[in-house]
Image (cartoon, rainbow, N blue to C red; front, side):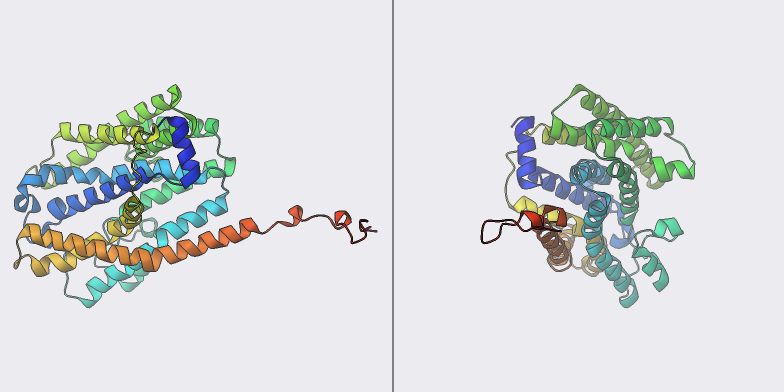
Length: 385
């Protein structure tokens, strides 16, 4: 499928099924990193020693979040095209908060109502309440769930992208926005200034810009300027990924995080290759309907795989082999995530969609015919004094 065909598919379906698969892949990568590398307190042992055959691959799962950021850059730019700020804010509210609120409540219940201690953030009830806003880091409060840090990054990206929404989204404005952000990220790389991390986000900017560049290829074709932006962002992304993984290895030791630098480079390049394949329409053949379900399952799974591990792994680790314990935990997390999607997420999303359809179907006052032009039964027109 060429670029034009991919653009037509976008208009026709409102989504790209291949991105649903990549979302699910990113969530599973993060889950693998946590279950098989990071959650030593959950297993009561070093996970890399329990699962040595997959330790390097699981360690690379730390970069699953970076893939999420690339997908977000693609999808968010796609979603704001032709939309106003209010519609964009409502779409993000409906997409992020229902499952998130359930996640905060479940996490509070796990540590307040059970004997679980692994990964306990030790928050007061009021601090859990602040977590409900998703702005806890702005108030100096710890995240109730370790994965919430990435949502804080996402929120700051939404604030930045709102500049485009307010200005009006066009190709040239997107190029200026992306170029300025990349320049700032490169200039401030390695800076310890708090405002730089808050606004510029040099560790993650490249991923968002890369995703945006690939969306623009999907919409306007693979132009040279977009390849240049993608290439520059790729270089910054590789550098940021090397630093992040190296920091983790330094903190826990190579035995606990056996990830060589070359594997990090290959993984990030692989992300860019996959997103380029999406942009060029080379993955357009992925049209299995189940991919939509996997895409819907991704966000709840990202939120709930941690409390599932905290509850289930300690209960089974001395009874079942490690691999079977991990499998049971994964299946339980997926089942609960699907329940949250059907009960908490989908009803609200469908309600908002139905309201939008009704508003779109209702004519605005400016679309109603003027009284003077309404024909009467005699064929004359009403006169308005």
